[in-house]
Image (cartoon, rainbow, N blue to C red; front, side):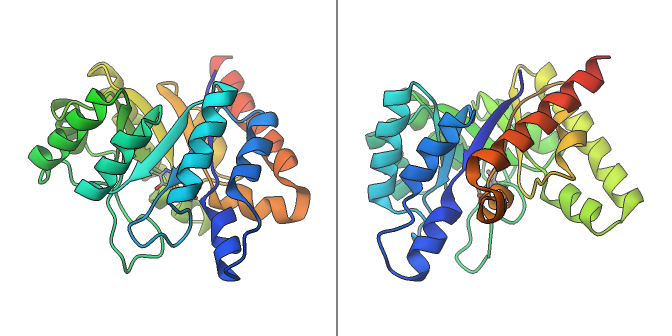
Length: 251
Ligand code: PXP
């Protein structure tokens, strides 16, 4: 079954807007797991704009207690690799990070940064983490990810979701084709394939229907939707759409 990782970063964004102690990301993670999330994703950014170091410890404890994976998103820096090696999460996802960006824009350039990324990957794997690289569905990036020693690639779905939401049908279809081809190539190289960024109820089905994809990581939309319907309800609906996409594809 296609797994759903719920990214709880934006619960911390709301908490931090008031400098308060609530809402607590770990409480959202607990609810998400109870509602059927297969794992929790959290991105400790260098500027700590959403989750902080204390959240990582709480989330890691929770996931260990529940026997569910914590996917620790992080920039390829010595500081972050050190934190991840100390926390020993189930998984680490290396992402590009620029301080001035609003969210993770584009994928990691594994072709240009291969030795640095291979080194971080080796250190994280030695600490027991399954390492994924967040990349565009570009054949050169996929091949470089396999060569860098990653076990997983997470394909960036942001451009597809933006085009689909803007009603740019042809552009969305072309990007979806690249995601499909990228997933097939990655799987043929022995990589596990994940996908994420920008996914909502309207865009989840075509992505979930790509047969090689084992996991989707979804955050901003679910946390936003939770304001209106509650987090469990939002997760249940997303799960239903994901499962329906897989079933339709199998028929
Ligand atoms: N996957 C990765 C690697 C990300 O960086 C993010 C955003 O933090 C997501 C998935 C989730 O994206 P969104 O919040 O747009 O659902």
